[in-house]
Image 1 (cartoon, rainbow, N blue to C red):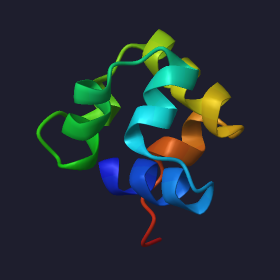
Image 2: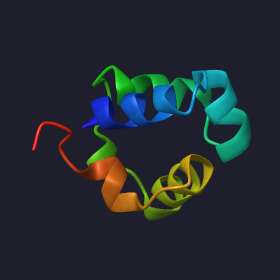
Image 3: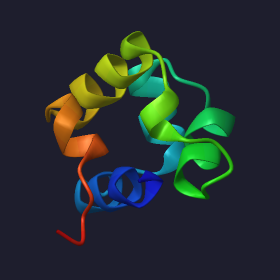
Length: 68
């Protein structure tokens, strides 16, 4: 699931540090989601909303399986 976050971030030509700064979500948290060390589907709604807002997308876009 974190793969979708990485894909969306890279499509916007953002680094993890850029996303962290814009979203106010720590770079470590973003790294953990993208590397599968933490499950993004278990994130608090606030965190998902911050990431979605920074990526100008919906929460479901972050959570959807990119392979479907």
